[in-house]
Length: 389
Image (cartoon, rainbow, N blue to C red; front, side, top):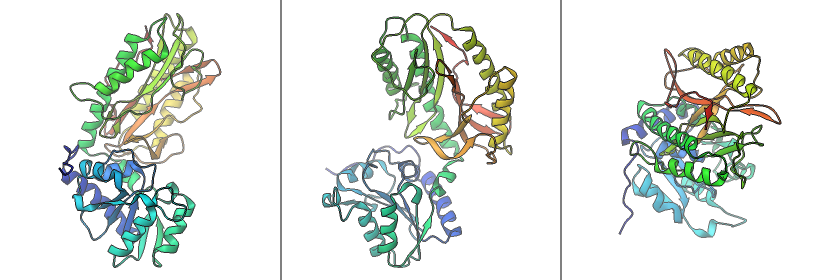
């Protein structure tokens, strides 16, 4: 029995639209063949979400071919046939002899394919920033004199403006994020182990919301007293205690897309300085969303937040957020003062207002939103409360 095609998250026309945008950018840069190697960009152009990026693989986009060709480890080929919108003949599995081989690897298979199938290969685009230096040198030495062009964030910037179909998927992910946070408010109690509460929350993120399950697990952070002054810690073996504070950050996932969410919870009455910080952060959040209008800049959004927060007697050292979509962070625009990226409709950001002030003071709240002419439109429906549980 051959591997069947899975139900596609998006119609074929949506993927061809994305590829057309990439090919247009290739033409501007005089690139004949683009080798896409970052997993998020491969997902964007093909629908592939399998976790095979720990070994060399690449989606080869040719200016002459409607569909790209995916070259991956042979054992991962069936997953690509199953998930990708492309024809099965455009999936090529390279042999196991290229794994843990000190002389040749999967990138050699990609180069061999280009040499065999691209009669005109004047230039090859690579996401060079995300490739080992020796791999870039391999392309230069083996690619038959082709010019190597740095196309590191070409696809990433195109991803920045979402289609309405993508927005709908991110709303589904946001509904799952909401469900996870409501579950957190239900299970975080004195005497409960952090691990047990995390298990319940993560189970909710998998089960999903509104009849749509989570299709993957994204980063999950639970930072409870006394570890609330940091941001990227998992659960521990400790139990929650009366008076504990818990800072949470996670996201539902739908077909690779995320809508991250952060909230702070307090077991019992929160400390006065945390409540004051919460009030300042919420005011800043609302000011930032109001500023996130079409035609404004990322810097404008950050300035609106920072100015408002300072009026409440606080400041935030880290950036206010970043472009978000597939696999969480997009390596493009940042919500920070000085980033003059112009906001366009359906750009999506995680307005990340985690504020870690001292070794014993930290607080989090966030919204994932899309840019509109009227301002930032949040995807989640959760109240902007400092949860008392």
